[in-house]
Figure 1 (cartoon, helix red, strand yellow):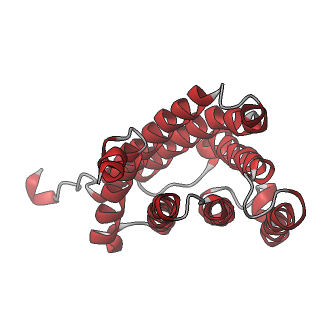
Figure 2 (figure 1 turned 180 degrees about the vertical axis):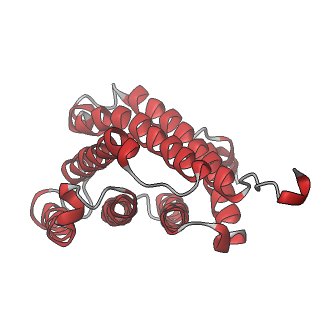
Length: 226
């Protein structure tokens, strides 16, 4: 019971609570969401499942690293499909989507199979995915002025979420890159993981706000109200 309440009051529980709100909101108003935001809801649901499973495995088996390998793969696939929908058709990534997606999946699996096993921290593939997601976000950030967006609220919500992606992934990439050094120092850099939790919390809040903006977008005034 003590371990249960420790999990409840742990700061790492806050991003999970925000994620649950995003999942509830997204599922409740699924039909109002444009396709890219449906993928974000799918990402939130996947994230929640991995998070809960990781806590349960950590509590009962003292080992949950295999789930991080699964999360890294799912994260790459979901963000690839999300950015494919919102990036320009002229984007290099959009034009070679299948090749890019297949290559990324193969590299992640090869890392698990031959470099960092299923019971090891997959810092190589996680760093790779972070870099790829940052490149996605930068591509969109520099090109969104040229994209055709039918509704202003839609573009604003996408730009807000994209900013959240840049904030979180740009900050956390250094944490994952230094993770091996952290292990060798016996946890001396544990504070970095606390920073990552805070960045994740900010990211999840931005995701929730983006979904809220799309779902509760202001309705246009009819001619009778003018």
